[in-house]
Length: 214
Image 1 (spheres, rainbow, N blue to C red):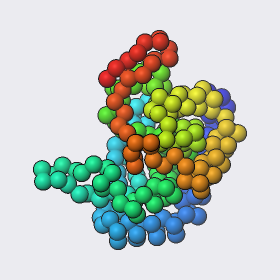
Image 2: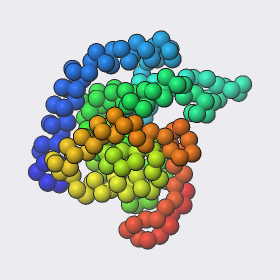
Image 3: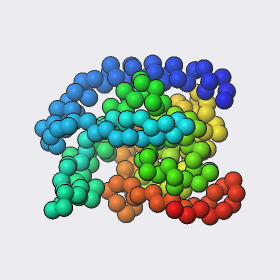
């Protein structure tokens, strides 16, 4: 860890998140009202996600899907529950704004690997598991290089590349590129789905060259 990562990055993240929360509070209030009107309660979606060193925390997002269930009480597929309003929230990344509170709490950073699902933890190979060496981020290298339109293996490669090269200029370049990507609404969906496909494990472990499987 360099001087920036050790002493500057966390205070910078806190100040940026605090400033963004204050400046975007009207946007967040309107978004919350629209979510309440169109999708109902609760307005916020919370879910356990693994953070630095695999420590689990509560992630906050605005809801973008309904709670529709089948006759057995099981939630319908994401593609069915994701409404047109929810798609707009995701395409503009407005659903991500509550994660600013995760940054203020210290669960997340502004830039870092995106926090994924807890159930993926045992599926990572040694190379992929390195994504938990740092705090997860609101955005990261994978988000500015394809977001949901690239494969899981490519996402993890970008995550590890970031971990090996955490710099002040690099972080701000990612932040600026994220703004451009959001404005252009790039990489919101994968090639086969409205949401990113489930990660099922597997892939080559870069450290050993061995193919790992779920």
